[in-house]
Image (cartoon, rainbow, N blue to C red; front, side, top):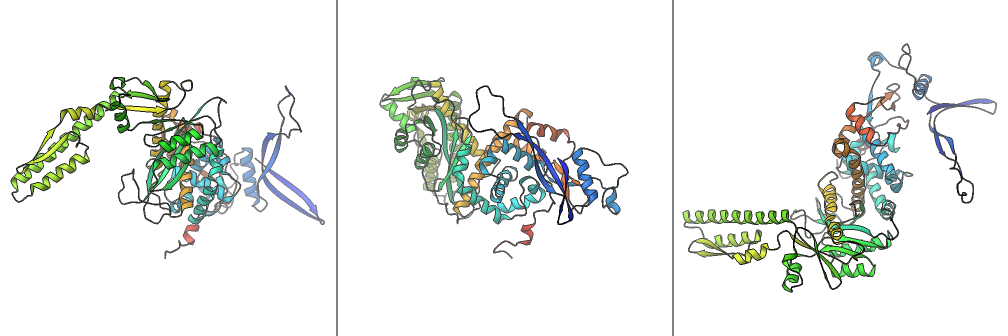
Length: 570
């Protein structure tokens, strides 16, 4: 950067402008037509971009800025401009936090997120702020507006004052552009003949309140009884990189959401050779028919009743369930069988522990009935039957009354029958053998654990998608898209910080200490970056894109929330 002074005369009168200019080297314009083979690479030229007009600033401040651009220190005998009293000794003043937003913005630019979301309009820049705030702060839109007061939003994103209503509008703008944003960030096809792998799973997200337009009662995977919810479907590539998120009403089952995922891959992303991996119970008859029409393949797992039905028909044998995957082909479908010894031991230990716990409760109840003659023994029997239902023990444990006591009998044969499939699972697929071996089909299904990890990050971990405090459908869908884009950013940040032994939370905490330093006097607040950092911040900054210098601006904190009372509140 440098200072450029322009002098012109108009109407016999002289004019002067003082500009802060940055030089950039960009590729030169190429001539028409296709370059010849072996032609030298195109030349580059230097262009000047005006960052700010300094004409109205005091001369001593302009001199200070020019010295800073040239890397020259202030002369020792040069007094700090316009300092009075105790301010004369205050050479350094810390400004807003710069490291968090600047580092996330640079990282988002490298992975193409800024280009996909856009930066031309104010709504697009506010949408980027929402993504960064979701990763670094979470909370509501109102809390995000408060959080911005201590961060260099204007210097990085070129956004002036805003409140939660502006952020709500940015959510609605994001929702309108979700298809184009997801298409821009979707992975490009690899080799022409390669079959792309996509993973799909669903979860439920509960609400605080009952007024959301998508909220409804349904099967709650969060265990939040009495709360409305919505259903979220997450589509990722074979490496677990999130591609798309879709929201449905809370009473929507899994199979209909799967049909939408198939349609999205076929129409929006235009993929041809696809193997879609889904959990058991999701890819059912309608899903398989939709995949067949789209000429896609699938990888899924059978439910326990389906496995037992095949065993009863002698299509599968228990001897095939071993530590290493084994394959059986039936009616043009491939079935991969495996028994995980660790899972088997864990399930059997859990069943034994549950039965011991139930026995302890039955004995305690019998003792209570014995010492309290007025206690009704029939209630003891009802409690015992409820315990068997709760812990799934009815298949091999029977309870009855013997006088005033509850006694039980165990069916050892039924117990062994129930335990024979502990740790066992069967994967079903129609992938051709030349496209994937037995081990590869098995590994592709286990890749679903990456989607489950992404759900944990979205829902309860770093990003806190739930609980949702929004009411309008478009804003809720925009909130889900913000969380998806923040998840992509978090995964990339984790890859950069993992070699340092740091988590995403560790890195963000260290970046909070990277603050701007005042350039000039307290009346005109101009900022610059520090010249050096402590080791804790330096190692994080070295792993991330270089922080761009702050945009020269007159700093005004975001205080609109203090002068604009919220609607409906005194």
